[in-house]
Structure formats: C-alpha cells, structure tokens
Image 1 (tube, helix red, strand yellow):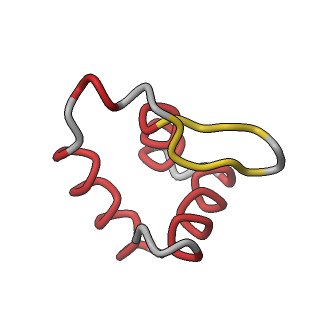
Image 2 (tube, one colour):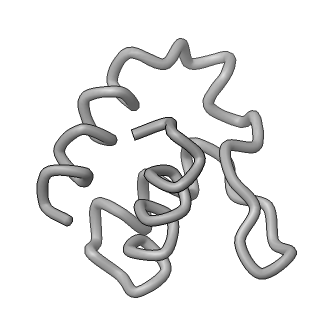
Length: 61
C-alpha cells in the first residue's frame, strides 16, 4: 500500500489548489475531497487505507 500512498501524494501535488475542495471519492456514503483524503493518507489512518484502496479500485491510482 506504500506504493499507492506515494503515488497519491505525487498526484495530490499536481492538483490545482482550486480543485482540492472537489469530491474525490465516496466511502461508506461519506464524500471525501482531495484535501481530506490527503490528510488521512498522510497520517496513515485506517480511513486513509480505505481511500487508497477505493482509488485503486476505480482506477485513479
């Protein structure tokens, strides 16, 4: 999962600031923006792992 984490962090760095408030993924009926996803993934939380898995499943990572 560390490769997916690094891939997400590289992608996040390229996202324009005005798009970071857009919804990136929905998990358990809760929407997560680029910013909230970044914070969860950066801190290696369980939710961050779910976000990475979901992004991999839908082909973003």
